[in-house]
Length: 488
Image (cartoon, rainbow, N blue to C red; front, side, top):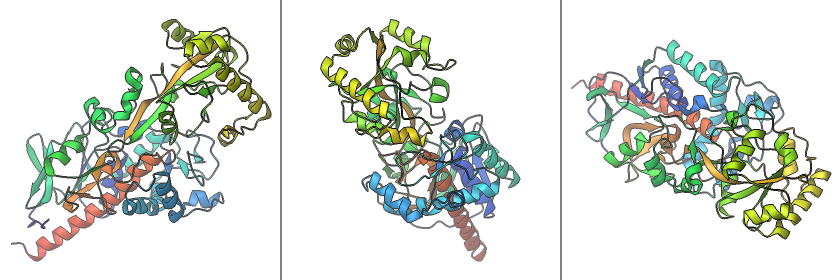
């Protein structure tokens, strides 16, 4: 694709979307000296990053070093690629892993607080086990995703980045084979570099059906926790301008109970003493398997599993949560969503699984967790990583309950504009469209079938946003230099 003949422009860089990726891009570009316009379709900034725990995965950071964790970008890269079966793009993934460390240090310099201490959850600041990891890479900031957004926005204001809320971009402006700006309310806003950071597509049901058909497994139980601005605007841009999309069929669906309607912050957590059994009535997984892999396990068992617990577990649920509450369980029994029976054999009949399989599975479960060692699925290690006692109470006191567990909580989608290792957007012909960059969920090539550690999406947004802003600013500077040398 040819380079344009640059003329005067309104800004050096225009960033579309003011979530974590867009804020990082705008701050990065402004730090490089660019005049930046940040456009946000909604009436507030933050996007899905603001709704998250703010957890981000990264390697070889000062936080890890302070805690004696030996890590490297190469080690992270190998783990990331292997978990995704090498089906993601190696070049961009290598960049992501290499840039993750400096991005954490950049955030710390801006004022984000990630204390050098061990954390036992995604809500306790520090370093945590964030999923299927070879070493701990989960960095939990103080004040969660909201805190990240506030620090980045303060930097944006300090660097005099112009912010326009309620400004949904209609299209790109492309002339002479290169991006020249965006179309907004029928008017052109011009710049030699544009960063698309408009989020994913989870809020558009039609696009979800097209690009994440696995979401249909949950049926009416599906609910979305992504920001409302995740409308997939990048898909329309791709289709209008011959741009490549990458990551079709991939996204993050958390396993939740059929009656659940909120993220666990509001919904609460299921009881620890529960067993997950497949459609054959046999235990089939670590009940606390990281969400990176649990949807895939369910897929191998027909798409969903049963969670079985007893009345002691029900009554031990802490009050005040929207879904996992003792009285709420009984309400769901009355609706027929949760099954209830006085004996395990009777419950098996309602579940339509072999009674001897269920009773044998529960008997073995009780014996394993009385000893605190799960020989079958190693759940004691998952519990220990959370700081929980692996000696669980037996599932022994009726009545007994069963509820379907489904991949029903849609967090993010991975179909984005295909990017190279410099976050440049590629056309369907494999060539970069000059002047166009992408970050966050709108960028494809790195987020894969397996969600590598809690914080994969937030780190992806911030790392790619920072790199895209830097690259866009460099292009703008080069464009200005060419114009000054040859004003004609």
